Image 1 (cartoon, rainbow, N blue to C red):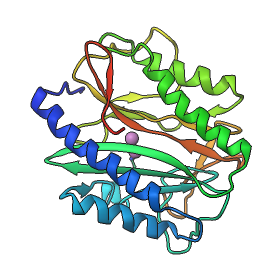
Image 2: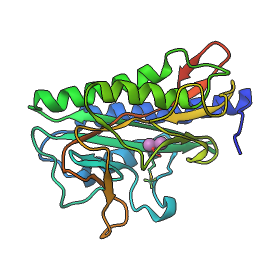
Image 3: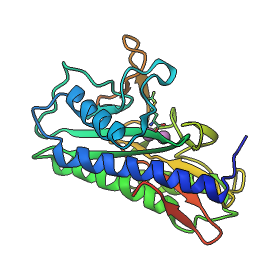
Length: 249
Ligand code: MF3
Ligand code: CO
Ligand code: CO
């Protein structure tokens, strides 16, 4: 079921989303080569809880941390660890969710660590562009799969692979609500978006094949099949009668 948020609910969403945005800025100012992904997770936990919010990834379906920290060929759901050290030249996606007053905000950024190759910088840039392409013309009444169409068209024009195994989603009281928001699709199809819907648009774009696999040893980590890098960019977006509002930026 898709929840259309009331004005009061949207205010609560704004608050949660502001905390998410600030947490990612806090991390972005501190993340660097030599840190472990566990240290990144500690920054996330510290910031979110200092705002009186809950890091809602912690314990979600048994997930053991407050953030997903995914390096290079890890697409998403990298579990923070004392044994994973961020290196110069890495691209590191940090994906976090915070709950405040019963409502969630969710966003992800891919950070460039030190001296990153031109190839990887371009992947990160195009992934962000995919998100903004999806917002063009988006408003009350837009067919849902226009989002995926826009993301896919832009990514594939650069020869990149669009991850299909994972999607964006509605968000509110629950981190994951209907509808699923794929990063691929046919223009003009799907349900029509409505003002008051809050959704997460989150392109996951691979330099090579779109195919991914899940690490069976931890049950979470998603990697590219070909070992090439992947980037992720996510924001929580409110649909309005005029267009959209990005709540986590
Ligand atoms: N924040 C993620 C998303 O974009 C969800 C992470 S899964 C979790 O949907 F288990 F880490 F919570
Ligand atoms: Co997320
Ligand atoms: Co999400």
